[in-house]
Length: 255
Image (cartoon, rainbow, N blue to C red; front, side, top):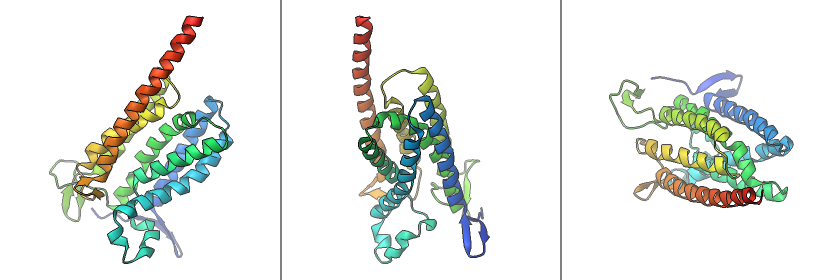
């Protein structure tokens, strides 16, 4: 399958599909988050300011995370680190950076971090579902050879389209989050922790099919991080729901 990563050119300016899809993902996520902020009576200016700060920092975090686990490939030519259009972004690096940025911003302006996290959770997963298609145009994030009817032809070899698997899983999680948000009462932060758990479960299994995984010794880094995230998010969710039930039951009894 011969697909160009370049959408179009204007003189010396090259516009790549990856960049277009990242812009679409950011725009869709922003619209979604602003609507959620209005429902939660959260100042949308704070949300927009946070996005303007967190978005570029998260891309930097995604790149640095990837480079850190592939340093041998960049040591000889450090300038290659700046060439993100050659590929090499790690979603876990972006998520870690976004969470740290959001936490620091919330503390600085005395906002509820968990409320902000819930507001942005559906935006995160929708953006990931859209962004994965950038891998399609870059012909990357593919899996082992297979003879399944939906296999993707990469350099003459039919392989698992792992980017597609993850994109479809992300869309499913997005839909579940929208239902969960309406149907399941709970403490602030619940939606975000459910997002982390569900995404990480899917990522763990999809990562097992990839041939370009970042490695941590003999282990796939994304699988290690995904497992740790599932356990941490579930434990934190259980703890926060336990506290919330106690407060809620105490309030009901006083009435």
